[in-house]
Amino acid sequence: MMDWVPIVFVIFKVLVLGTGMFFAIKWHYDQGKRVKEKRADLRTVAKVAAVFVLLLLGLVLVTFVLARMLGLDLGLA
Image 1 (cartoon, rainbow, N blue to C red):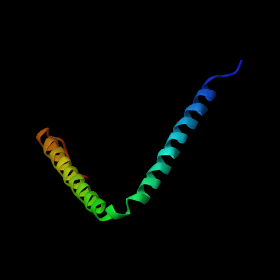
Image 2: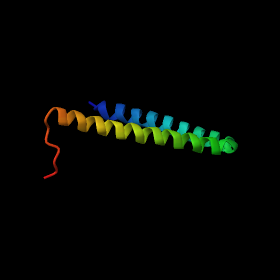
Image 3: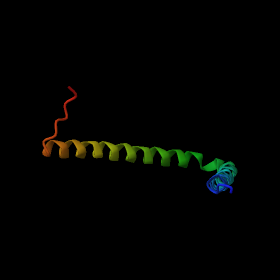
């Protein structure tokens, strides 16, 4: 009797990779149409990156404050 697990996994893998390739090709095709909007996209990426860095710093600060309040040792040695 044939094992069904490899068959299901191969079919799933083909579906996932096929869907990924379709959307990758579609995305690259759509990017070719948006050449004029590059400057606006760059500003948006910079804003999102700045917000991400600020949120990350805030999370680190809150983590350290909470660890100190709980009495955890934060020393490296």
